Image (tube, rainbow, N blue to C red; front, top):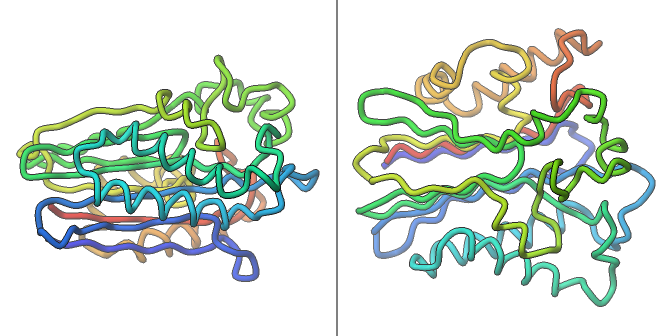
Amino acid sequence: MRTELVSEPGQADHPNEDFASVGLPASGQGGSIVVLDGVTPPRSGTGCLHSVPWFTARLGGALTELTVSLPDVPLVEALSRAIAHTAAAHAETCDLSHPRTPQATVVLARWSPASVEYLVLSDSALLVESPDGTVTGLLDDRLARLPRSALATEALVDANLRNREGGFFTAAADPAVAERAVTGVLPRGEVRTLVALTDGAARWVETFREGDWAECLALVRKQGARALVDRVRELERADAAGTREFLGRGKTHDDATVVYAEL
């Protein structure tokens, strides 16, 4: 088995709001991937004393423990428990009902000798390669389906599109949001490789159109996860003015995370 993980902040002087882990149980039977992309809040406040990295570290840590230590608990329930656990850690000091309370996108994958489970919530991506080389992007496309006029951060909040029907969903303080995720189970024999990407890394496909998901996975396999992030940074610098603006290009550089697992 081969795994690789790269996570880089968008700016050297700004903390990385992504979280990533690969869990490999001591039994050697299976494993899990957890990738979170913290939602950068506007400057007007979040109602919370804590930073987005604080939130993603705790939510990600809880998910890593649950997906490894409780393999029989479905991923939806694992996410629900992790959100509840994280919310309890700051419910007494923070306004968790605030629409800008710390939150994150989620990608989870867990494999056993029999199956591969997955969960995707919001605009991070999970790529699945089958033994014949076919690559499928498992996506939650609700954010991408919103009108372009609504895609600014403030507009998403002010229009009540975040964690609302008709909008899109992120992991924040409500455990029930786990039921909104895109989920599924695949036979283990149908999966050769998994790649999880936050949208900062997925820009190679979604923003700059350098290739499709299959070509993205091939790049990571051949040149490594670092090569994908480096190529995204080169493209961002070459288009600093944002002339190729697309969904998620609200900032020149975004935190970028890639997790590769060749099963």
